[in-house]
Image (cartoon, rainbow, N blue to C red; front, side, top):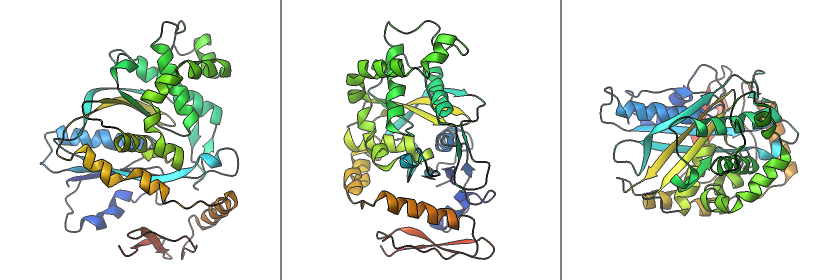
Length: 352
């Protein structure tokens, strides 16, 4: 491995890269490029693009790159809290891949304050209505850029960044409308009154989702298993959608359209194509074992979850700290052993 890059917004230390904390897993290999990419939920996609560019560049020395995307999404008490979740996904980047990144992609970036973390703690400041509108605006803009992906029929499956599943349904419905003959005039023209209204029109949204329901079940629903079960996990969200597809469908010869969004905002749309690579998709499917792993989760009450959030909030930034809690850890799990008076974190691992 010659490159290790992390995409996350769940940072404790604002200077030390999480990538450096992972180096203990690569003992003896200090010649490794990459740091941590941060831009809300988009950091994992940035790390992916950076790592693919490294493999394609004159600087590449024949080694693999690894991209790690992981976050803990927690919110203050209120309507957003139930959408939170956590998770991490690792991607191996190199030649003869079983999922190939096609060269064409589109990006849309804008300056907005829909979700950000200025207070130093874990909880973001969120303007929910604005964030949803920005997300949909970026979906529209990426899909409508000149020379993009034609239409949904050109792709076998779609994967969307999933803050919550209803937003995924909204995004797909708008793309389905663009592919129909009923798309509004000046669709995707910033400032156009009809377009701006379309971003918040609940009646239009409901009718679009109803009209596109069959296509959603065929093209999008297979990618939603993990995100629906584990909630939002920021940079890892879109990749958990991809994991869901790999776990449930034969992707060899199939094209998968992905949409990644990070508040603030930067978004990209790109395509992966399945093929018979060095590591077979069937091997990845068996290793992931998604449904079985999801079934092993232990159900807890909303009160338990609120108590855990309160404990996290009280411990955030504390030093020295000896973590407490009665949650059983599976074999081979990494955990925080403690934080010393200088805020240095020590990690341990349960027996395999």
